[in-house]
Image (cartoon, rainbow, N blue to C red; front, side, top):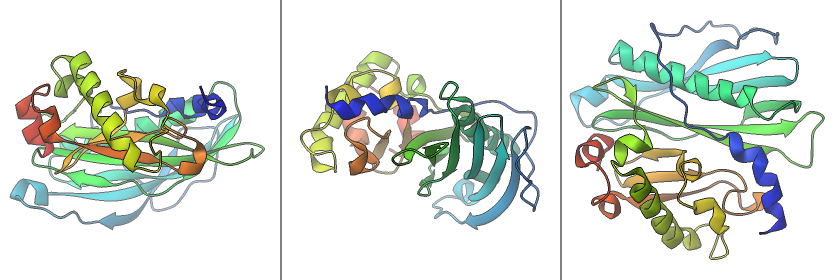
Length: 259
């Protein structure tokens, strides 16, 4: 095992979180000062998705800035949020994304750190889903050698207003994970990870493939910092074509995801 894999523990909080809510979360126009309370939020910009059906046209993504602190964490992060469409879907997506950030705030044992914006993650509206990526930058407090990227993803079914999980996609979860592992091994050599990618990062386990989003072209797997190579290569992702998953995935779920 390469020595840089020791640092992979920092990236282990990368999650795909989901939660239920009874209403749509609100956001104020002012960023609240840091405090030892629940995160505060302020609305920022919006981006209008490209839509191909009337249902898709009802949804759009915006961002909300979450600012605050705990006794060991300071955070100032812009997270994706959803507007339009079905209120149940909006509430589920928004609360799930906030829960994903909260998992990052609550993680990392007793370490003191800051969370800030990394590169903006992609958003996606498919035939029957809405999906987005949250990328944050983790830095020790006081700062260490360099920040570390932390990833979370959220995908919500627009018909049921429920999160879409790996188990939903793969009736036989282990068979699905095995296929994702095999396909990742084929695709990673053409990424920044190269042919010397870290094989333990694509072992067929739920944690290794927890961060994924759908796209028209396939299932986009987003690997955490250090997961398949050293920090220097940056964040790496691969897109497994839907056709490569056809015999192990639920065809109706693939259709809703965009396949």
